[in-house]
Length: 308
Image (cartoon, rainbow, N blue to C red; front, top):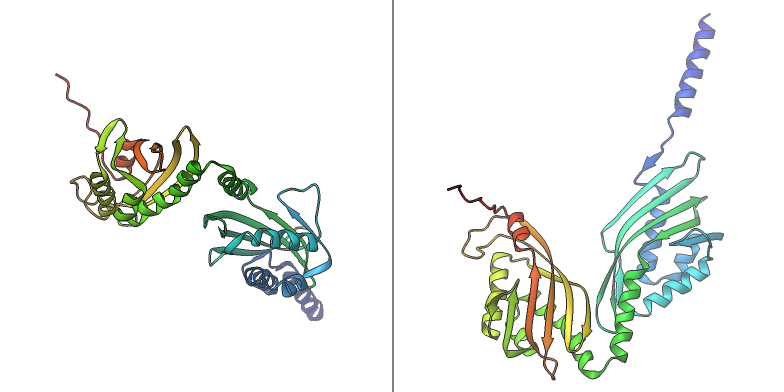
């Protein structure tokens, strides 16, 4: 009887060990393999990069219908990198290892890829997801997904600038410089890009009649939001005017519009129409945005009038 009990206990322990299978982890040799793959990619060590794939590995990028080989994947990476002065994921990468129901080991990766285009120094940001099947220490399948349109649009902007008339090239080049002037609170840079009598209207209300008043307004935003940033989302040119979609962000840690700091963050989207003279200098901005939305993010409210 005692012998039977010991056998039963041994079987129970064996079954418990068998059932305790690690299905999810953020570490292990498979994760290290994928981390090494990214490191090789960022260094351009393509020999080491290729060694991490099995000879029969297949790759899918942004679709499931047609796979490509590792050699074709490498050719594509090199083609993209040739357009860039810098690129990489930095530290913003999340890894997880999972064991699928059919016993396959996959490593998932989520990262924020950034690349700077050689042609115009524009920074392109792509959220990237990779799912990699690892078997016997090698990658046998890689699935990659990101928004191709982001890079394509950036490259189309470069081609548009190459083929545009000189005045349009000047205006397009000044877009990025204008954003830099705003983000750096650089009054002198802004003055170099604008007419002395530059005008700004915001939601139909005159805010500036000249360079000095315009740069004072820029300073107000940077005083109220020391981390104030403007991002140019998109634009197009027509008849000497630029039509721009933009996004502003910042944290209200300083006085703004004669009000004490709230300590709150704001993010607001807007639209501006810029007019330029024959030299490509900015002469007028007509900006439109939801001012109430911005103020409500900072904690301001509207009190309805009392009834008579």
